[in-house]
Image 1 (cartoon, rainbow, N blue to C red):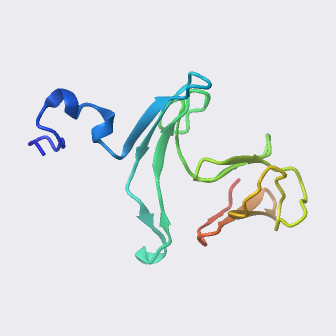
Image 2: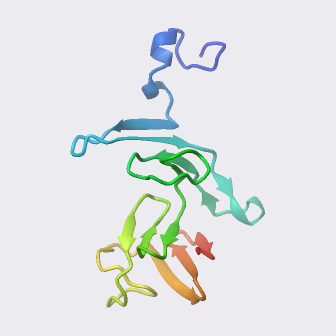
Image 3: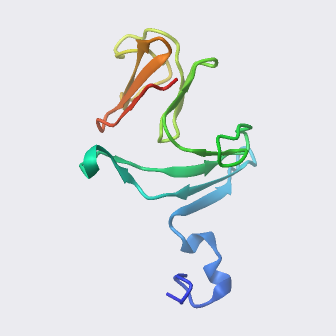
Length: 141
């Protein structure tokens, strides 16, 4: 490791994304779209007792919104868009809320095949998403 914190002594190879495990980027061969993500430090909830919340700053060129980090950049957190009825979980999965679905607790998503989270409406534009890991996102409005 050199004096600048790079894992290589050669500056040219140091600038390569491959040398920095918390940086990931690339072109999707199907769409030609470039995406990029920066893994940030995991935060611990409940007085540092957990569960941990992995934070990732993510760039998607299809995201036209500016949520405080610049157009296309977003923290990869669970969120629900009431207008489009799309729920996005912090892992990056997105699902359309379609209504009641047999075998699913709370609001149903017909394309969700793995029971990795439950999504519930608590009333008055307030929702709760509970992950299998017991991590909860409340008041998603």
